Amino acid sequence: MAEKITIHVAKTNLSKLIAKAEAGEETIIYRGDKPAAKLVPANDAKQAADRKPGRLKGVIEWDDRFFDPLPAHMMLKPVKAKKAKKPSNA
Image (cartoon, rainbow, N blue to C red; front, side, top):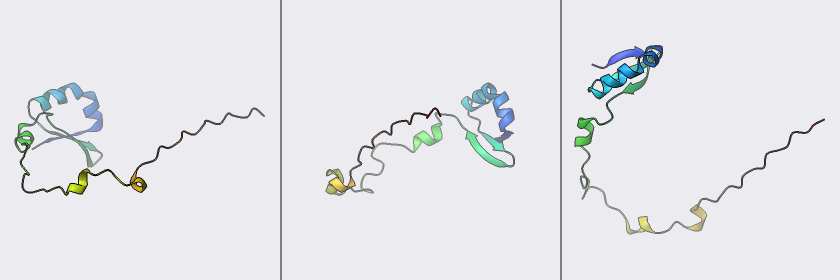
């Protein structure tokens, strides 16, 4: 089970919490009574095991049109930067 702590305690003990995460421990950080964040190991072996190249081969198929250029009406147009107004000295 993950350890439950408040944001204040997490700020105060961040280095210790990171060390625990590196050791494989999960920590849930609460804001009041609601969970706000979860601190987990960055290189979690459980998550990495499911990610293998080609795992969805035969499950997902791309239509050849996927790689065609977008029509002009769907292209994003650059937005001109607005000039900052000079404050009037009245």
